[in-house]
Length: 347
Ligand code: CP3
Image (cartoon, rainbow, N blue to C red; front, side, top):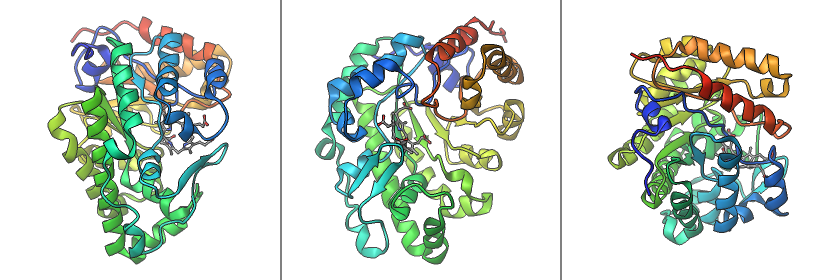
């Protein structure tokens, strides 16, 4: 039931040559797909995630339509804290909202030990379903990195500046470290449960890490993310570390312990590889908004990404962030064809 070790996605994660350049898209399941809109139903995405049959179907939709090289579990980074009862929901068009945001020591008690079997058995059931349904296609499990999850818990919702988060980080470093340490344990438990249920790789989403300077990231965030990677190292599955506007942080994202670093479109891929060195694989990095343009422009930008990688092993083609809801699925279909048609250079 496990995908073969020579699946192109898994080989690329290991920085090894593969029979083709693997491609998948962050947020490949979701509002850009008519079949998603049809089955998703009303209510919070968290309700859909709690339904293993529905979550399985939604995860499979883009694999069927696009023939991508990996599936990503349909869930959300706030699922563990929400299922622990922290009082988190996801508002349509807004994102995660928190009833009583994290403020002080007493709130740590609301983040006790996280047992995935008890809190969210439906996630593991979805993963088990998918391990059967996907056959040779690897499933990517994921978790939110401590910093990005903390930012939602502290802000109470999406924020442009992360002012409250940075105030806590800089003003109460003791409490901050306890919060991040707790969230690292949550992420480790979530990822371990997903891998034990059949996920073949994992991605840690630290989407908002790029709001930090390198020195602050290294001091206040990296130790907790490193704890996550160390906590799953024995499982032996490839791990991907992703964030947005992380050009200045790329080497630190690798230093946290990941084999693959996600790169957004603001740094050209050749430059990213130079910053990361030859031992780190990369994932990215087409601007998602490019996919809204006419095909010739999409093709030109996609070929630029491929050319900048220059045929080196260890490249997983992806967007630099998630698929935008207004994206025409036909464009993503053609992108997969284009990437798969690219000759791989024997080395
Ligand atoms: O990539 C995938 O398709 C896998 C599933 C996935 C979702 N969220 C499903 C989802 C993953 C990996 C996430 C991660 C996630 N969630 C992140 C990190 C990645 C990133 O995008 O930077 C973050 C920051 C969140 C928090 C979150 N959840 C936001 C900001 C939103 C958007 C709110 C909105 O409605 O515009 C969500 C909701 C969400 N998560 C949707 C999906 C498919 C869309 C809502 C829906 O269909 O109801």
